[in-house]
Amino acid sequence: MSDTRTQIMDAFTEQLAATGYQGISLVGVGRSVGIQKPSIYHHFPGGKEDLYIAVAERYIRDVAGRISAALAGPGDVTDRLHALATVAAGQHGDAITFEQRIYDTLPLVSAETSEHVSGLYVALMLAPVTRFFADARAEGAVTGEPEFLMNAFLHLARAADLTDETGPARVVALFLDGARPRGSGPA
Figure 1 (cartoon, one colour):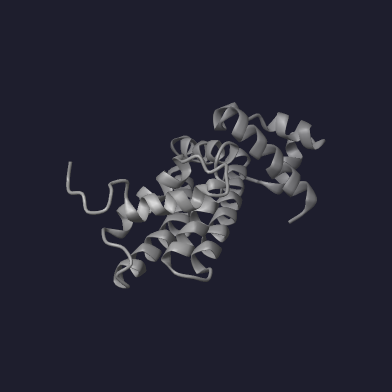
Figure 2 (cartoon, rainbow, N blue to C red):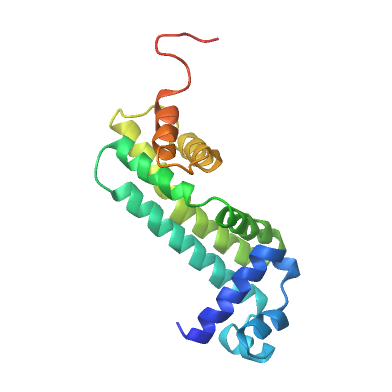
């Protein structure tokens, strides 16, 4: 990828995070890179929507790579969930806001682009975690529906305060063991 193309994507990413898709100005993107608007179309012939696709793909592939590495790591289910919680913890703040901006843009782009980006998100970020839970269930390490477990775990990990090093382990323990004392029945 050319430096100019990367710089355009970086500037677009900053504007998307700051203002959302509707607030992005290609003139402003070009200004921050030091190029004119027509130069953006040289690199991204579809303009704003092509830039959105490129930026969303880059983000999804980056996070998906970290998720895959966490799930393929050494150890048992607990160890790999700890690694996954650590990845999810890295998604706080600006990253979560950016991910939300990607999601919020879906109704503003063509149906084809929306389907492409959401399909990539599901295939690369959610499906591997769902498969992990399906495998863990088959091994008897967890019970429950894999899709529910995937959603519950990712939401718990993202919502928890994981600023200290014990945070991911505490999230995994809560997820696997629950909050109820051992031996106690339903409330």
